[in-house]
Length: 63
Image (cartoon, rainbow, N blue to C red; front, top):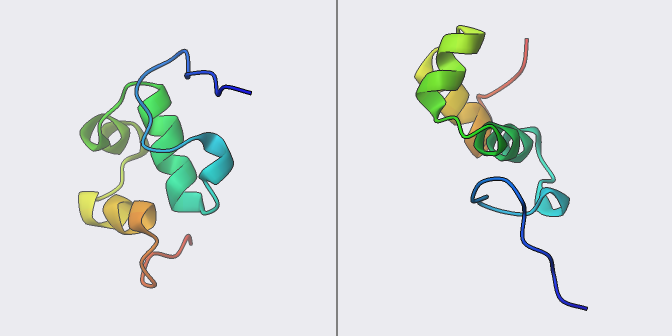
């Protein structure tokens, strides 16, 4: 069975492979067509913190 292409945007990975919070943040950010800068303005977070969350680095914890 052939995989269907996503209808919206160009995603880094399919949602089924988003096994971490960071990967899901990237998935939904890309689904909206947003870059990190747009998301940062909406959520009011520093770029370094968002980047750490998306990468899943150990210092990236939700508080």
